[in-house]
Structures are given as structure tokens and as C-alpha cells.
Image 1 (cartoon, helix red, strand yellow):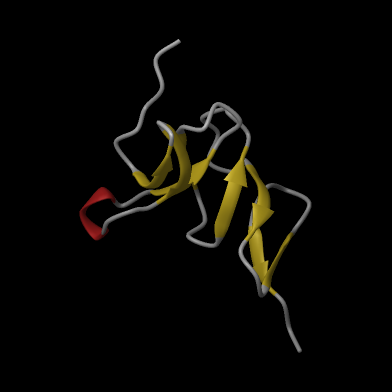
Image 2: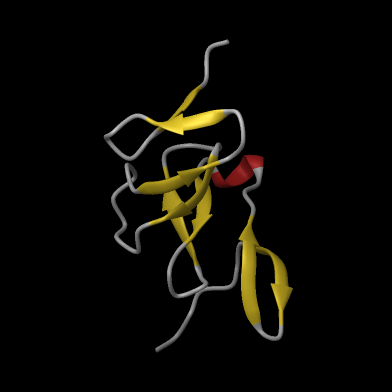
Length: 77
């Protein structure tokens, strides 16, 4: 299986640990279960499903929570 490492920000022992996005991409990327980067709809998504559906987030950054539809919402204090 070929793994896309184009958007890998942190790599350890040849395995992607964290993904990144750039402004010119107009997309965000999250770490999938194959340790590759998959497009997602949220810049607050840390991990996601392998599917290329933009609402695929499974884990959000600190300060954000899943909304039940695969997106990350800011936690209101």
C-alpha cells in the first residue's frame, strides 16, 4: 500500500505522526489510521477516518470537540 506523505509535518521511523496544511492547499489534512494524511473539512481535526469525505474527523485538537457529524467545534466556556 502506498501512503501519501506529502502533508506530513512530523515523522518518526518512517511513520507520519502529524499532518499540516498550507494556505495554497485550501484544504486541511488529518492523520489517518495508515499514518498518512487525509483531507478533512476542519483545521482543528487531529485524527480522521481514511475515507475521503471531508466530514471524517475522529479526534479534535485541545479546545475543540466532535459535533457528531465528523467536524470539530470550539468548546464554549
